[in-house]
Length: 329
Image (cartoon, rainbow, N blue to C red; front, side, top):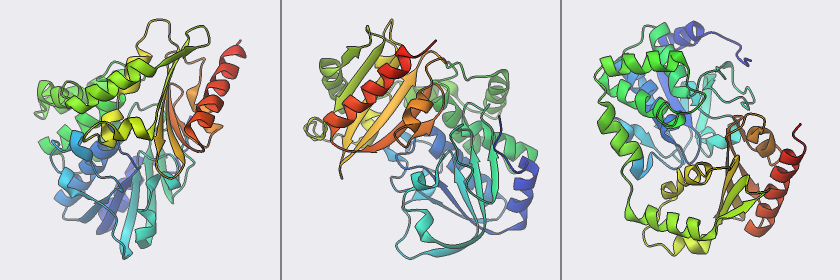
């Protein structure tokens, strides 16, 4: 399945022919979003291009160890002009946050992604739904276009791919993914060092959040669904807690024996609830469930931002999951 209207070579040609770029990715960025944004920006800068990277929330404390993350800044209040605007790892235009409004003009908009739910916005669209991470797409672009490649770029791409494959464990990991991983290691990536930072180093406050989750998690649909709803009060009650600290907590729910779908719901400011959903069984398409609430993603990993009170959203989400499970042939 493809929603592309161009090839990577055509994208590379546009990159070579222009000078001023802005790279953007989705709000609350994960390792894939930041890793591929920074890797692409660094490669373009090595080509002598003028490159800016914008994100509403920045790389966060967790990813700050990656080289080049200081390039990621918040969009300015005064709009700017660019030759090319590039969106990476972002399935819908609104998920880019405030960044697009800061682009006064751009001759070309490029959309590079791997989400099946991508709406296909932009002038040049390249979406590889078979790639487990947008980091893999950026690697293929750099190689196909003969663009600069070095250790710093490789480290960002490793983080991008490792994040979205669960450190090369998820079922979306392909033979090509391992081949690219080998190339990144040959470029000098120290797997142990990066893995320790990504997966084995957490602040104490995250453990406090996990304790709250373990005490409040629910099991429904004959224990096939594990869920947790994090209230704003519980989050702010943990000293120093940051939004990034909730990342990955859903994996604990997902790993429970017998659980087929895991859901993490987080009450946010402004009357919204951030919903993350994971499935172990491709018959249970969480992307389709999240789409009912204006979200999207992949068959086995998806999310949405839903307007409403946490209790109401939790009920509606769990009812939708139950309906999907009970109607599964």
